[in-house]
Length: 203
Image (cartoon, rainbow, N blue to C red):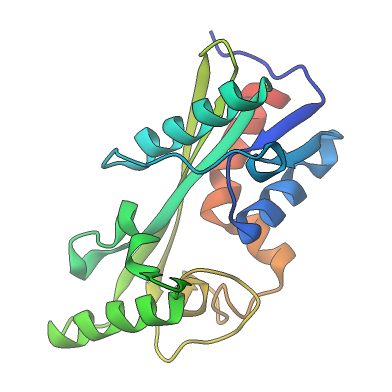
């Protein structure tokens, strides 16, 4: 049986400012006070799984045990069809440099690989998001969401984060990087997963 969230305080198991903003905005209607894992001095645990759900569970349980509060994690990434689903669960890793994450570099890498393969247009892709809500006693609930679209070039817009500037969702003329954040929040992979979470645990 699905466990309902009954508290007023929730830890977001992330140090990613973009994700924190999006999740806080989605939780706002429920009057929930949101803190980040960093607020509790928690480090980011090593993500050792090869799928979104496994890594989401690692992060949520680590934050729940470290804070003593329920914790919500998000593991997400972009899967490019012509690259056999890469970068997928390794999306953030593709952006890693000694000086921190460089997503323009990662987007250029994806486009270069597509060009090297002479991948046909449209270059299909989807954003995936798995949310895990974990409690300090070890219980968790997991929800997955996606949004379909294609990779475009050059990069467009500076309103999103990650791979948003090269992702054009189906039926839209603006990339996630150009789109009004409220519009993006309403249709994103995170919104899809969050809708399932809300119906199961918050409604």
